[in-house]
Length: 214
Image (tube, one colour):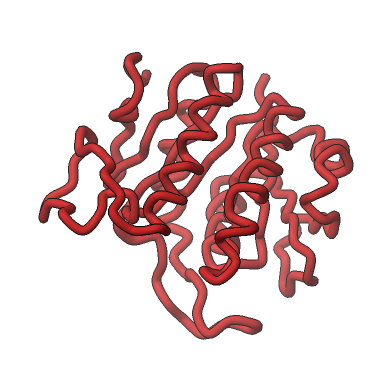
């Protein structure tokens, strides 16, 4: 039977907190990884104060987790040195656990000629440095999936509803919206294979994959 424990990497961020609340609301136990103390954690959640770079220690402390949500997002000025290395750490933790890796994604990779309406089959054609960096991150994930990682790309036009929060100007306060996206993504947890996307609440195969999502 699949464990109903989720590990959230970067649980103190805007998306991380919303995902934490969504999993708790859905009846899951949550392991909230964050360097800084997290205030007002619900009883179903426990903080892991282990730095993500210590992948072995994080995986050991989260050995019951069946899902890893990558809610880490370094500041734009740090993408050159941190975006891919941090993502690789997150994927490495999921690989050690044999857990489903959930990657929230944006639309940077579609470039300046992005059509007015995006659908699952719209190809990414990045025209900016940040778009190319995000594309490279997803390509790294795809390579690992071919080697056995189970992964889901959760791509949506709007993850967040802004409210005031301690330590940040704004954070998500929309667990119902996050719950809808991540509940659908959990349906992938028993299906190894290609990268898949959640797009506007629908699950589909990635445009770069050749196998259908189930």
